[in-house]
Image (cartoon, rainbow, N blue to C red; front, side, top):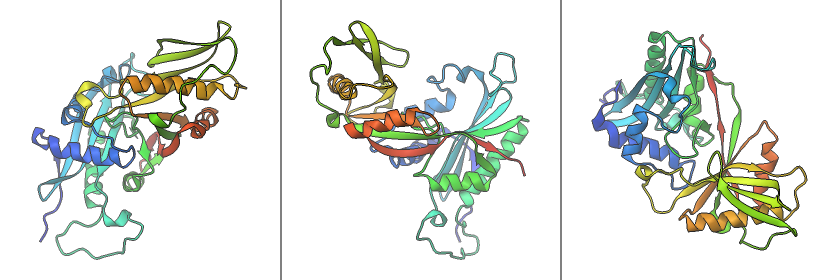
Length: 320
């Protein structure tokens, strides 16, 4: 007879298995994605990247589900303060920052219904037990709204990607509704970007400066800025390194309404050269499917990028 899954608070000795759970989910979305045990542990205490919203957090709590000595599911919860300095959209809300569980046969396309043995864990039981514990905790916190958005401590990964149908099923079964947008993620090997070449227009020059989100490459025509792209090559902080190579992203891309056809490949060629010198081998880009940026970013598919995933961002719990 199999023991039933047990929901309990996270213990430090769970750290290795929790990291495996995080990394297996991440690697299903971004090839080779992984973070260190230290990164996972640190993220349970604070989120330094979220320098605006993280100080608004009043309480943090992590649950795990243990089944036959294996961590099969986990979730991280946040309660935001009900104070005037907290933005209205966060004030007095409870967030399931992320919710992960190993899929069971009921989420497989070729799954066949089976009757579990007496006392055995039925498909989806670990996820349902974990979700019940999460919702109960949010109730104890007396928050005005229950939200989730899948903010894993993995560079470039947020929301509920299409590669996690088991997570989406668990959220919907519990009463969460996708109320936000869908984010499109693209990826390219740096070596597949256009090769560096001469400027496509007379008087076109490139200037490298520090931008708001990373290193900015600005194209200037006769001294006037006409386009820029910012790369974030610090996605993988030193404590995150768990594989050789590195990953960066196009944190911001701005082109004129009717750009010269050679402008984007020329900029990407300069980006390729810079990222190669930086030891980066992969680069991500993003687009919101509800804004005009989708055409701009998906235009990158002509220059080495391909669509990697679509993630549902922003979920709200509808109490039954």
